[in-house]
Image (cartoon, rainbow, N blue to C red; front, side):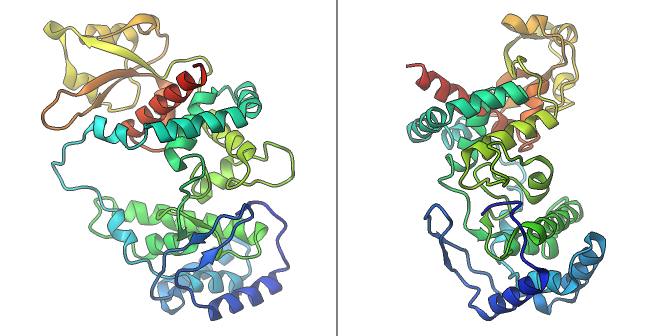
Length: 363
């Protein structure tokens, strides 16, 4: 799957979609340019029969200036994925998180070794990305490793099916169902807009059950906003071109305010006599306290953290029901990592994997 390729004449694309609709839209073996075979997850009922989906298609075509029949044919070819709504539901209320268990899913010998290979193969590009965007190699290596094990697991859901399912059948039991449905309708619209310009087959791209694509698992709106042609070959390829992946991830972080040279976290210890943990945890992962106010509330950043010039957040990582939580002081850069995935556990895994790969590189 490559982005921003020349689009075929729109009439030809409509004919192509009509042919696609005649095929079996169950699980299909697809062969991208690199030879990987991807067996897609099968959907069920097509959205061509849904009035709400067709009205949305008409609205998108008008807003974006797209061919109405092409948009209707594309959305109409999407199929409902029965298991996807269930995957979007949060865990049971009261479930205790476990940082060590979460970490073990992403930091192991296999992923570290793959990270070393990725870093060595792309060392010059990683160095150039740091020079251009200010994002160090270990952060980019951590992201791509956590997301897809450097392209090994990029998802096997047809993107059009996943996005249509979440746009039109988002689970109403979700506490933010209306907000999330709006989000995925926006992502579906962004996907259609990009595909109309760059692809000869909008039914072909595959990704996660949420519609994220490529090595860095960018959502369609992130592709439109942040993906870059980092090797200058006049196209953007987030599946098979590590240079574009590296440049795009670095550009994403710069856009969200990454500060070169700033640590993401500092170790922290508590002075129990004056500790105001509830006050420190209230802003969650948003940096809200100066180093002095952090110390005044009983949390003492260690080392250079005491001289940190920006704001800090107290990050709590639970370790199950039988172990005390882990705490760190998070900086603005830690918060930027959470803009990729809004989870402190995710951000810590990215940091830890990047550091583990860096250490292995130096051995």
